[in-house]
Image (tube, rainbow, N blue to C red; front, side, top):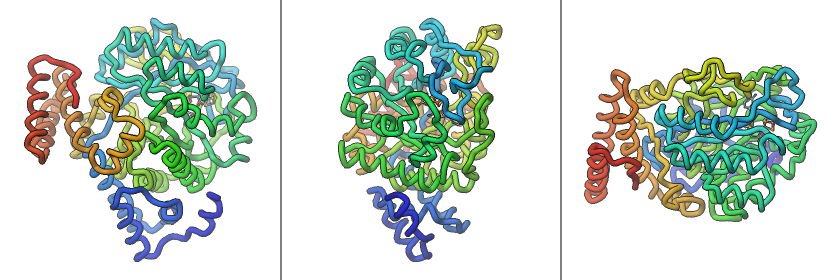
Length: 457
Ligand code: SAM
Ligand code: SF4
């Protein structure tokens, strides 16, 4: 079906392109046919208009805010053999490490000290080193012993009963990438281990939602197969979730294949260039306007600075893909002698959180460390409905400046950020149209300035 749509999708004429953008402006998403036509564009002028439109839609749905998070790698033991990954079982050179609970808490505290409030736990698949009990233990200890406000996970798929237990531990979003939706390619890059079962992975989100996860995150690893196929299939996946449960994928990640020490693949079989990467980000935004479109530190600073204006809405920062990487030698952590695990892949943007926040502010956007939605129940169907009816932006704007104010008071020690941040806070406050809501946000800001924390709307 995806192939048929792509086969019949030609790049649009100028008039057709205008009509597709007009339909995108209704913030109802796009059909697979419209999405496929946008993916066929290679005219520079159209690409620029496409990314501008995606930036505009992102702003209408979520305001100018860009959400920040960091991954925390728990374990690199893995019984799968994904040819692209440094953690694959066949990588005999890899030093394996599963963090102890104390080490997990230590890593989370280091991220908290940098200013992060949301963390994404990541783990290889190994029923001994990182079973469900281990993952749940990590989640619970982070909530118990650190100030992290929401824990999301990117861990291997499981059955409904296990998902239910995982959800009960307080996890926000369950994230899992299909890698490629092209079955023959999927089978060739996953030669062994449980991940070899395409259907088990493809069913993960349905099991997760059945088990109570209202928010799930999907994605395709760009570079394994024709990006147009995988982008369209990802959109189709989100649409299926919407049709079945009334909620689109909460996030769509856009991971692009990176070099990984010990990986079997020397390079991407279907390399995606920067222009096509930006097109994919923009098409995701127009096709699924309610989704958080996530761009990680796999991408360079330059690309990330562009895509946050072209449809991207969430980025990671200051990231390590090494279990123990924040405390150990690759971070500025306290334990440079610690023996850490092998890294999963090379990151490309290695700036600190402060540097990333500063650069976001300099381009006129507002960094956000908000975690409110998961905690007040703006999740699943209600999140999708609010986002598609443009009712979400007011909360996003308010919470971005509340969390930025907290950050400035608690973590900022860098010249220039304070001034930039305070200007952004005043500007966003001024722009809030509803007088009662503006007064309420101003009141919350005052509370934060007088010492109250974790204030949100
Ligand atoms: N092990 C679990 C799994 O595979 O689902 C969960 C975490 S895995 C460490 C997270 C994601 O990293 C994978 O789903 C894959 O898309 C991505 N990844 C693996 N190798 C990569 C590489 N060389 N470059 C970029 N992303 C990669
Ligand atoms: Fe294991 Fe995940 Fe890496 Fe595959 S991508 S080898 S499952 S850690």
